[in-house]
Image (cartoon, rainbow over all chains, first blue to last red; front, side, top):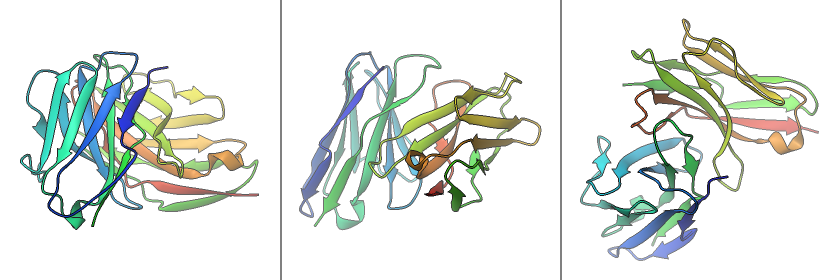
Length: 115
Length: 115
């Protein structure tokens, strides 16, 4: 089946630094990728939608200058948390699909801790 | 905007018994998709079952089945012959028929399996 690889699985960074999370589709071309955020014992909240070769579409309330999304190829999307603060600590999950109404495939998530 | 409501924060069931998780949603669209995802402690999102709104027949996947009531905007998940491995968070999710949107998730139901 389709596999989405997310890296790193865990990252700890200091306040004020930036961290990049990668989401790769391993055996299909992902025209659309989605980034979600999940707080402990909470649901997944859609942050943004990225389409290959175009700017990401951010959900209301998500700071586009803080959460930079790049989808430069059909197999890779990156989320960069810039100038991270402790309140950015969360679980970030990406998902991807190849086209149309095909099912979404999720990465294993990244646990970000900002100290 | 679409909303997904899961009114049961936690459910408990005896092993081998049947349990039903409830989900309601609100939308003005006529074409859409509904999903149930399982999230075990590993945090990996696992697709359990999917229902296209235009299909009247309820989806089934082995021990998992849904009761889709389109007029009532209800989409419950029935798990038969519950197994210890079914213990997880279960999220109901909605996606518009256009296919371009990410998923809107409910708050989740924590399912406990009593041995």
